[in-house]
Image (cartoon, rainbow, N blue to C red):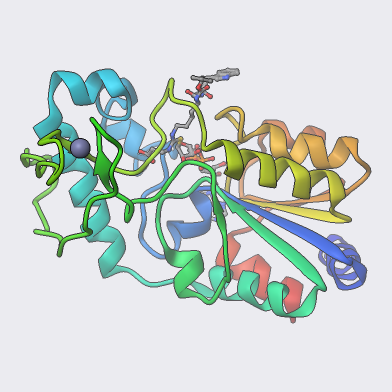
Length: 246
Ligand SMILES: CC(C)NC(=O)[C@H](Cc1c[nH]c2ccccc12)NC(=O)[C@H](CCCC/N=C(/NCCC(=O)O)S[C@H]1O[C@H](COP(=O)(O)OP(=O)(O)OC[C@H]2O[C@@H](n3cnc4c(N)ncnc43)[C@H](O)[C@@H]2O)[C@@H](O)[C@H]1O)NC(=O)OCc1ccccc1
Ligand SMILES: [Zn+2]
């Protein structure tokens, strides 16, 4: 497949690389994606009923229980060969910035230095009232779909919420700014395992292309990002990425 060869050549000579990842990056580790037909979280749960401030206001135990179930799942799985290849790219290219939409910590566990989490993390709970960071307690491994009362804030008594960005909430300004900055400066942007449907994150590869970067997509399926990808490698993260850095 000469596309793989062309992609490897572009990556090898790049000075600044952005690696932009979505749920597909962690799929082969056993973390469900969102939109995949049967296995995707949104195929089994209603995003509006679980990943919005209104959902948490209406039923905090349902939402907290769901995020604690997802956190316990993440704690039980491991980074895959794709995550390890991303960490290898960081060691090779003079400057690499990892930008992820994922709330898991698999990039960090694979050795990535400081991935930018555009949509927050499952390991950064805070008070919904005063925003004071809350301690990350050992997960009580709730069964799937079970309600769990959120802990209370030690300062104001408010409910503790997951440290993720819900639909309708603004992304962390510093993270978004750093991601856009890196996209305007990179030679190569790798977009891996994202459907490119959630905004403003999905604009990052578009910005990179607009500033002249070579966009390389890794995804078994076509996505709207096909438009800006110079090379689309139709395979999985854990199979294509090791071949790309071999
Ligand atoms: C759904 C979409 C239409 N809606 C949005 O984008 C909304 C609204 C919106 C804003 N601007 C717009 C412009 C146009 C249209 C809509 C909007 N955006 C927002 O609400 C954002 C916030 C969005 C963030 C939401 N939070 C998440 N996550 C954290 C929580 C949680 O995780 O529970 S989004 C969540 O879903 C997204 C899922 O997308 P993907 O990661 O791409 O995953 P998906 O399952 O879709 O696809 C997986 C892909 O992988 C591939 N794949 C599968 N297996 C593999 C494999 N093995 N290897 C490789 N690839 C693989 C598949 O083929 C597939 O293509 C991720 O971003 C993930 O983080 N906030 C905001 O706009 O605030 C305003 C504002 C501004 C200022 C002040 C106040 C308010
Ligand atoms: Zn508080």
